[in-house]
Image 1 (cartoon, helix red, strand yellow):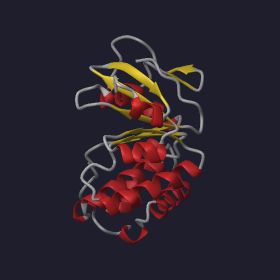
Image 2 (cartoon, rainbow, N blue to C red):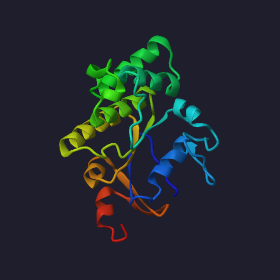
Image 3 (tube, one colour):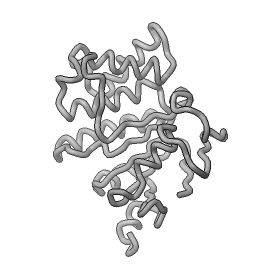
Length: 209
C-alpha cells in the first residue's frame, strides 16, 4: 500500500475484514513495526520511531474497541492522553483534557469512572483522549461500530467538529454512509493491497470494489 495524505484532508479507508486496514494504522502510528517500506510524516522518516514519539509529534489514533483505564475517571483518562501522548504538564495538560471532554460532549462525565460509561460514551472518551494529545493527524478505526443510527449521526457531527479544527482525518469504516459523508478521497484495501483509490462516489461505482 502506498498512500499520501494532504494536510487538512479527510481520507476514508474501506475493505472487508482482514484486508489490512487496522494493521496499516498500527504501522503508521508505531504500534506495530513495519517489516519493509517506510512511513514519512511531515517530511521526516519516522519508520523506526516509537509510538510515543510519533504521538508527541501529532499522530493520534482511536481503537475499534475502546480500552479506557476503567478505574480512572473520564477526566483522568483524558489527562493521560494530554500528558503521556501530548507531552503536556500542569495547567496546560488540565486545560487540554477539559477542552477535549467539552469537544466530545463528555464534560458532565468528567468525574465518572470510565468503567461505568456506556459503549457510546466510551467511544466519545476514546476520541477525547486522542484530541487531548493535540493531534495534527487523527486516525479513527471503526469508531461507529456497535452504534445505532442516531448515535452514528452524533458521532459524525463530532468528527466534523474535529475536522473544522484543521485536524487531518483518516477514517476506517464499514459503513458507507459515514465514508460518503466524511471522506473526500477513499482507499480500498483487499488482502493487504490497495485495489482502488478515488472519490467516494467513484468508488461505489467501481466494479472491482
